[in-house]
Length: 322
Ligand code: MLT
Image (cartoon, rainbow, N blue to C red; front, side):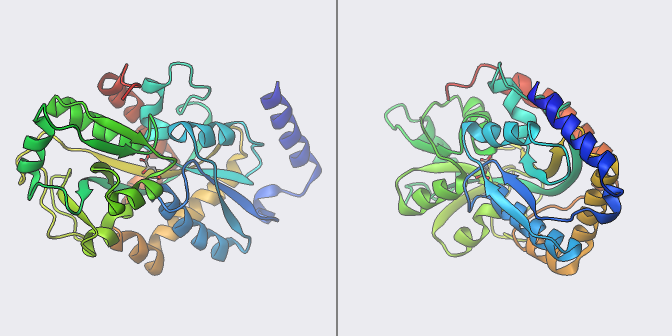
């Protein structure tokens, strides 16, 4: 009922006011980030929000709505008024893995959103606290498989990227360790740097600075090629775990029913952000993989969401307890 009223409100507003797309945005826009400040989703969102604000002349204000592996903030977006003034930064967890882990998920990533654009591909890196007693991935795996050793793994909640990708790792290694859930991998990284947890599977954009500073250990990046942002970090193939290949992604979404002219204007601004030299540099310096023109359409993002939901289902079904 709430959704119907929201759509009616938006429709009424549209009928009453001037053609929305030409004047949109006439006030600040909220960008929901479904994790705590400081993590990869937040980092990518703020870089994009900075460009949108400059390009469209209104504030794009990030609101961190954390909880339940990102599904709390994602549901908040799905239920928001579809008028263009609430959008979100989602990702491979909220719009890919979540349905497999939350049987009663109250939103459908493939139906309840208007895809705007894929902001950044974010390769996954296996990282550990800097004094973890393993000099390389092979030694890390040996320690992880040792039945007398119980490690602690940090993640950002069931269904998050860090949870899903490390669940995939545990399944491949046949290991099961203590897991520590955080409201985002920003706070999780603080504890990893502080040595309070042993390891994490996280998105490169969150890790580059700490790896370069030697504050954490990076064992391998789970992509076929090394990252130009971290040329000294070996691939999982080079490090002896070729089957562990996984990348996440972060993307902008609006709630279903947002007027198509407004979605088109947001997509146009997003494409200009990815063409803007300063914005590109910020994203690339953090190890992002940026989509080419074909990967910048709403249709290609919709297809990615559908593919990811189908991909993660068999990998994660029933793993909610991890
Ligand atoms: C995740 O694990 O899904 C993200 O890294 C969480 C975050 O952006 O904090």
